[in-house]
Length: 281
Image (cartoon, rainbow, N blue to C red; front, side, top):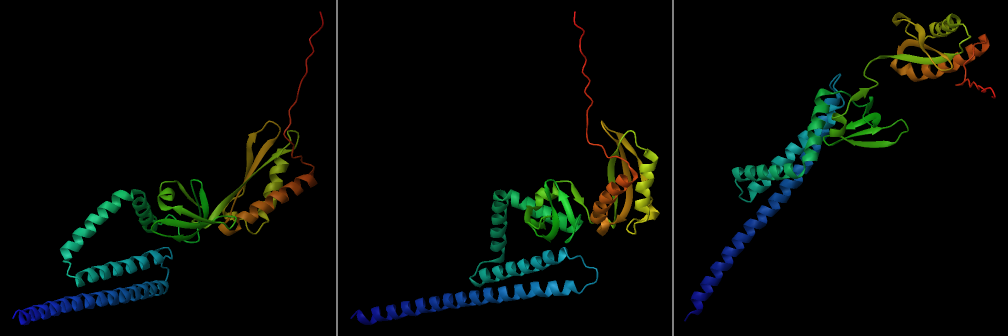
């Protein structure tokens, strides 16, 4: 007699379970579809932002990857919210969860957040840009990329360097390529018996006939110091930034050859030792 009732209850339970299972299955499929679509759209948006910014005249290349990644991650956050909403999670709950998670992550990753803050400051204040050669504390090299967490450089030996943004931001930054011209300073010592005026004329003549020297900024020579074994003469001229290294190397060689030809010595460090003998009693 109970068989029809049991059968009806079983059928109802199976139908309810099937309906719930189907709904969850549809939500899972929809969530996967949203995630895939979100990844595709975020990557497409990142590429479009880069392409669009590249067409803007005089737009700083340093900001392109930062803005592109910001757009990408913003879309991914919206996708995550949409996926959670698909499973019935309320927006207020999502915000509360994200806030609590952000606080916990912030406390656990204070150093990383400091790097993010430093990265934002570097990107917007722009003490350097991609392609600049800088020194910051014990870090030096040509900037290849500025990210939210780290800055990538290539040092003078072509070695890849990754530095935390906070370490760079908290150091004194020396940018060797920001200004269009640089001053070349060469210190060279001559003997105390040599003609100082003649030596200064030789240095100035070599500098004035060199096309790389910016004569409107002046050519200066003077006695910088009186050393233990030499009179130190310094030459100062201005050149374009790109000519700095070659000018410094060429002048050093030319000065040595010109001094040798003029008979002006470049003395080695030396000391005079005087020996006094005490008279015998």
